[in-house]
Image 1: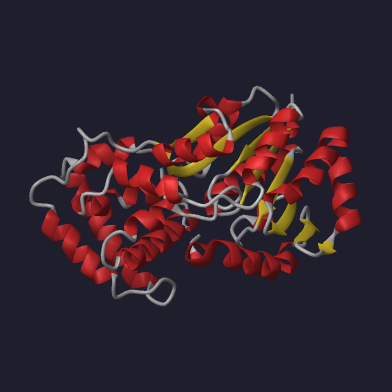
Image 2: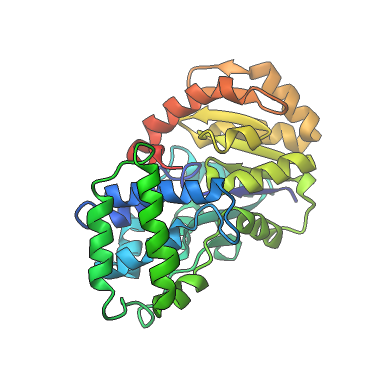
Length: 321
């Protein structure tokens, strides 16, 4: 049976759970944007042991500081939107015999709730673990440090203040926190991003990567997209940013995830050659979808339309890496 692995936030839902969780307290959105940019900077410098998406671990001290936990995660999951056609697409793929996996950096309780709403079975969901209520809680004495960092980050802006952001967060995450009990809990929260997304993909299917399809949109997906693409599989960049497009086989910018179905049928019938032929026949701009074959080149041409549709669909989350 054919296998497809979807990222959650972007391809199936326009929401960003971590961004919205941080938005539950004053200036949380600005603080998250700074931490998300810090995540990009660490990933781009290839810091040893660090993976794109480890933001989900980095924001834990701030969530605990404000008493935000599983209840708020599950509440947001009930309120989250689904991308147009998400549930129908999953249903049609199941009916056609596809095995569907959900490979997401977001917290597992949130991913499981959205999986139920789209019809993806829980055993096919990979997501970042979140502490239990018994584990949650900020160690005594750390509240003042977290509050100070929050106040600093609220005044800084990604890209314009990159060096200041990096200096302050290096000191907080790599010098202060390792001396506290919170470090152990954060180390156990291995975010499913970068290489870990690739590991999750391998754990969800016995197929060779050359026989698999993956759909992603951001820096957390680039390792998975790149490996599947280089192995001869189909790596689809959906409403993607500049971190994902260069590593993908083809790009689809659309307001409806169901627009991927003809591409998947072409892949199923004739593999990568048939998928390329189908994209070539429909390449360019149509009434709501925009297709590009990206192998070897072409991602810079595709980027403006992906950026436009991404901003339309994902609003504030679109600017995150």
